[in-house]
Length: 246
Ligand code: PGA
Image (cartoon, rainbow, N blue to C red; front, side, top):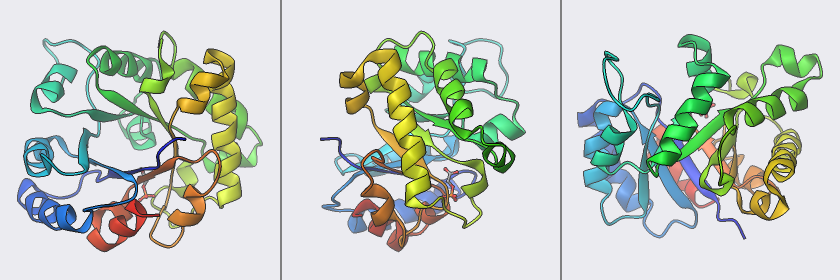
């Protein structure tokens, strides 16, 4: 049985001062939560987040990293830098990074490989635009993204995959649980084709896109949805707590 993962993606929200206060609340509120809990936070909050969550049930992730080992890459952060802080997860290939920061399937793949090499779990994002959905190419598109991102990955069970339809992110327009399930199922089938069904059954596949306190339970009850990558609702203690128990 796969355990449900409630993963928050704070995006560009909360200063380190705000994060410290928020995590203080969250620690209390998430005590004994049913699901695994992860918060992915801005670089500037990582050190605070790791320190404040030590010994709790909250895991900490970054929202991005560079794929180079080290060197002359002004403004970038390496996997070693994350490891040194005790960061165990990193979001890779979020659609906002693909769209606004020119991330490509190639750089996403390189980042996934680097994260795995350094024992950081990549939370690999994929998902179609509204235009692609309306053109009927959702499945082909997502399968392509997954295959390209996983090129060279040996153990897929060390990757968390997040299906995030772009039209559902931050729009309040969640995919129905059926829509989310059918794509998560197709992703699991794609993983099974690449690695065998045993591995596919052990791989965590999340849904993301306007997950909230009201819809989380229904989404997480679907066979192939193993939790959520949550943006807006992860910034509110009460909402994220409901999601962590859904
Ligand atoms: P949202 O964001 O929950 O605010 O839609 C999800 C995400 O982008 O990971």
